[in-house]
Length: 318
Image (spheres, helix red, strand yellow):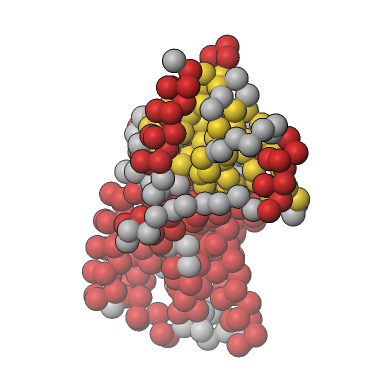
């Protein structure tokens, strides 16, 4: 029973930590559940101060989770809070079990919570690139409903919830690489945004390997503007890959690292360069002959340089 409960709590806390703490605390306070092996120290979860604090945090999270990009920043802040919270919640519930078993439950709940949080954050990052805000709200409401249903299963059928958690872990292992790339991209973007708030300009430079590639592949001594970017779904095999975009007149090349080696994606016959401001990231869109477009997420702190580069491109083409 503690094993099943820990699996379920970890998955729920990974999506909605404060709602999970509030729901479990209320169920314990009103004696709606009684778990085998439950600790006498669970009174901390039923304490009025804990219930009020978790309720307030739950309300804030409910609103923040439905605003595009605010939800991603919220997830970035909670990358470590949710796993630690899930582990502490499990530890509070089952501190009476064997110490070795308790450590196992502690690690299990934290690991499942981290997996759930990672999947949630990656999904939100993908949805945030849609131009309308309704998909965020719909996805958030579905997560709310999932957690509400999960709390019911936790109280009545914990092994069913544990089975769902195990199935989720299998799927997570399968999709781990793209999820990792999405989370890394989110962290890089959030870090650049914070730096821009403190007035730290982002001025990326080409590495020696990139300069060597430029000398070999691009004839002439052409200057280029260098930007720190994240590839979007327009480059399917490189989606959410962070790298460097070198833009020169009607050509551009995207540098990234794949399996430790330099990878390049060349863009030619550029007819237009557009810059769309955003909240967490700006968007740099390259339009080629035939109307095909490739967009890159531009890290914060480079918007003005990107606008100047777009203007120069328009002057070259005019």
